[in-house]
Structure formats: C-alpha cells, structure tokens
View 1 (cartoon, helix red, strand yellow):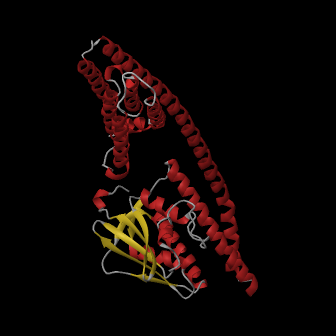
View 2 (cartoon, helix red, strand yellow):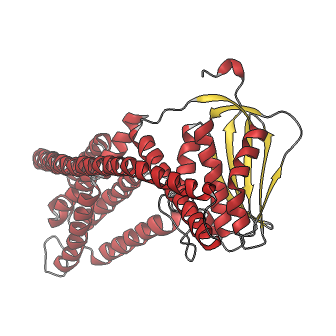
View 3 (cartoon, helix red, strand yellow):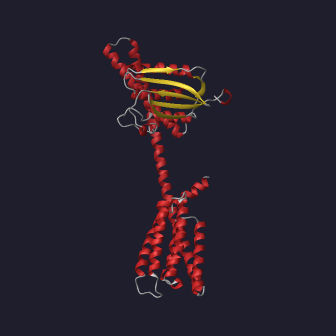
Length: 414
C-alpha cells in the first residue's frame, strides 16, 4: 500500500511539466492554422483540418468539463493524449500524409505522457505512434526508411525528456525534503522550549497557590481581603490547568507520556471531581447536575489524565453557560464503550464553530475564553487512552461526548 502511495505522489510531481506540454501544444495548433494559409505543396485540405481541430477542441472540453469519469489524473491525461494522437494522424493525412509539414506534431502527445504519466503509458503511446507513422508510409506507398528514422528520433526525444524530467523531480524532492526536515527541527525545538518553560512555571505557581490557600484557611482576613485572595486562588487554578495542559500536549507530541491505568469506580470518581469544582460553578450561578444511572460502572484508565479530561470539559461548559443555566454530566454504556457526556445550556455556537472546537488554539469568534488548549488537550489525552471525543449541538445546548473502551480485568495490564 505504501509503495503504491509513493508511486502516485511521485507521478504527481510531473504535473508542472505537463503544463509546459499543454502550452507548446496550444502554440503548435495556432502555428498550424497559420501555416495552412500558405501556398504549400501538397495542398492541405483546410476544411477538413478546421473541422478536425474544432472536433478535437469540443471533445476535450466535454471530457474535462462534462464527462468527469472517476479516473486518476495520469490515466485521464493518457486517454486525452491518445485521442489527440489519432486526431493529429488525421490532420497529417489531410495535409499531405507522409510528406506533411505537421509530422512533428506526433511529438506532443508523446511528450505529454512522458512528462505526465507512467513508463508503461509512455511505451504504449510510443508504440501506437510508431504504428501510425508506418501506416502513413504504407498508405502513401513510400519506403519505410524515413519512417524508421523519424520513429527512432521520436523515442530519443521522449526518453531524453523523461530523463530530464526525472532529474528535475529528484532535485525538487530533495529540496522539499530539506525544507520538511528543517521544519521538523524547528517544531522539535518549539516543543522542547514549551516543555521546559511550562515545567519551570509549575514550581512558582504551586508555591503561590500554597500561600493563598494558607491565607484563606488562616481566618485572619477581612471580607474584602478574603474575596481578593479567593479570586487570586481561582485564577492560579486556571494558570495551573493551562500549564498542565501544555505539559501533557508536549509529552504526547514527543511520545513520552506514560499512563498509569487503575480500576476506577466511575460514579464516585465523577462525584469527587464535581465536588472539587462546585465553587467555580456556584460563583457563576450555574447549577452542576450529576445524573447517575443504575448499575456498576468500573473502568480501567489513568485516574489523573481522565480527571484532567473531565475537568477540562466541565470548565469549558462553565465558560459558555449563561448565569442561572445548568451543566449536566452523565455516563452510560454503549456497546464495548463507556460514554461520558457533559452538556450545557449554551446556544451561542454555530455548527461550523463546533466542528473546530478540538483544534489546537482554536477559539470561536466572541468566545475568547473557550477552546485554546483545554479542549485540544482533552482530545489528545483521550486518544492516548484509546478513546474519542466529539461535540454536538442539541435543543438543550452544547454537549461534549467522550468515549473510552470498556476493558475487562483480565485484558488490562496495570
């Protein structure tokens, strides 16, 4: 499969050279129309030539604009060139046959396939052209010596064109490869920089949070001071989550994130997580509702990473749900998966915005506090754990759905 893909990509590199052939073809046709106005011997059948050119132009237009068969560009070009070959044969016959000034036109469809096709197509095209060249000599009752020389010259021109095109493509591939390698190195340096900076920021943020927590639990603050300290503590929580997301994304992209799977009782896990976030929802006058279905729900996952995913989804809903709205979290079994749904009562997002929510750094217009990294990090973490995540709009509002594979005790190594 990979070999076939590489072949297709290699052939696509001949596209620019096919354009050159198209330009020369157009110039050759215009020149031909001018030449047949001269008093040539043998006298060309102008009416027949005009009709053939018109028919050929019409057929090519219909092929490109109307027919639209499910063919690759290379195959389509070969068929067009094959049709052009027989059209050129008829034009040459109408302008003197073997003695026509337009025998040189045989080169054009052959070069087109040489520049813009496979080697097998090139050989087929040359074989068909050689047959037509010798057929012209037979029709005219001429010897085959001149036809053989012309056919030999034609294959030399085509092979040289193919060789030079291959050289140019090799140079282009090498240049593009160097550019890609340079971009990879830059991306790697960027990832390492983000990781180092994020890691260095974690320690001072932890210290700041510790001091703020000490101030809040000390009980010696005035009402105004306590409100300011609580606000600062909540902002430090946002900053801490951002740093955690950056570190997780960096570890995933560098392929060094390690998962510590363990057995998790999902209802109690989500209850504890929701309890730790109640203050945020309460401060925004948003109701956080938990729907607990009947039955036992035990999963194997990384407790810390799954907590980050659910926390990010709840935090995103808290940012866009209006005051006195509701955010609801629920879960259910779906085949061999467990689906965790986090829904809110926001109706402000458009369908095209919802489809981009999990892209890196994407933020919907007018919702600068939504997206960015938290949803992208949630997506990457779930994918690392073998799950998926998506969003959809419902009559009740925006809903995030995350799925995790339901594994048994016997099949999971902890």
